[in-house]
Length: 278
Image (cartoon, rainbow, N blue to C red):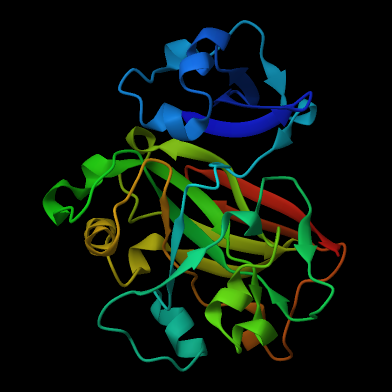
């Protein structure tokens, strides 16, 4: 399934995407599981809880970040592809380099991604994301995939001048990081280590890499992150960006007002956002 969070008529909801239409969750089921996070944690979750008779068009909704709850965390990786290590002259790390993304920094598919007024160094990073569906702490690698709900896409919006001050500052500006368009459940992606990730800026390819080139496999990442903190349903691990970021181009390419950024990953879809100056 493709699971999506959205707002319609000022009411936040969620549903399943089928044939480019949204089947909204039933009113009865939503009373018990009011959002996608609680749905992921439900042992009763199934396609039967979505309304297939009265579907909704994409143009009728405001897409929300796939997991809009402020209680959910995104653990993000740095320097996880050799191509990005090379362009930044960063030696391969022995363990993943982690930081947190704040929920206020996220924005949904097809919504404006905000270029901060205080910077002209707003950079793109296309990333493949693991979404957790089952809670766990100190999860063994052998059972790590049992904790995966599915996969999605993050544009890890990076304000490079502020990032020089601290990673948190550069990675957490309000509404600078699109997250979506939806979660594709793991049963639809048999091999998450063989997906092509392509980032396009105004139609031009800027990043083009396969997830098979990740420095660490998904079971290891889940096990390592859960050694540090309990992973809850709706939490996510964003696996880092490949080479091709704007700040390492000659001359540098930064996002500006009116740009259209698209990140496409095989079997998931395309996360598309227009850049709007604050």
